[in-house]
Image (cartoon, rainbow, N blue to C red; front, side, top):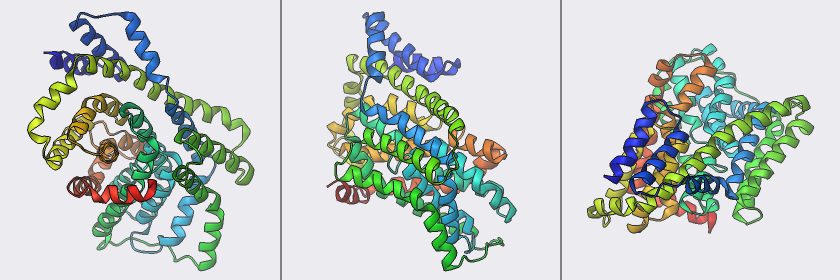
Length: 426
């Protein structure tokens, strides 16, 4: 009955068009009323405490770094450098998009920001070169979701806070799977374009490659600073976010000189608006998370899944299946905040490494950004690239299937995630 009331209130409010943050508050209040412990003061206290977290300070700074990166010319230089390396091969612009997405993922941590940048920079070029518009848009959409996996990742920050798992370890554990996602896209793209007649760009000379690398050096250094700093304990993930934002600002204004001072207000405002949405979601989710714990729902779910607790692989398949279904109807941040307090007790009861679970959980949620009908990244690419949502959805399917296949390989072979993860964080 308790589960029915919680899910009924949450899903019912969402179906009525209530914003997800308010739906979370309503579901928490419904549980309080059902348990005969409704108290507006407790409700308000949990909302305040939900956003009162030092690690969450990383969110606004990573958002700001992403905004500055796109406006300050860092993204453009990364794309140009990738273009000199692989732009001349058959389907080269697709490989450029994948390479650029992996590098940009280590700058922003936001799939939507990377999707907007890639669509604006590459989609017109791909269309002029004769690439299939739907397939091109699908590839860029699928490439963009690498951003929440490779550090710095806003999703890992939110999950780490909600699950009480080390954000630094999550960051380090996400590096190898993020690159693997890029490799899966690379192979899929090669299969799809090998027989097509596509106009390739001229091969860049060694001098042009060197010039593009030199021009992009300052942009390429940022991921190294973040990863090395986190690995050797120079700074925390929150401090890394500040370093990323300040570095991007200095490079954009003093070195590349593409960002003007009169643009800063707009960038700060855009970052603040996005951050406010995320932070309110986190604060509202804390009410539901607290009530879920009080109502003992995790224990009920553990009892329900008890037959699977002895088989970690089957349990992970079951959990991933649930997350896939939820991801088709809900954005990444709400999914993390709603499911994390419910799933973590099950993960711990089964003896699954929380870092390993966090990486797979995040990959699944990231893929949810390109699953219709609520694929936020699909909408972004469609809007920026001036292409219909139907075309983007049609083009993304082969790449989405490749990423899901890799996800389930990681379920079967946890070593794919944990062996490189332990190397990175020691």
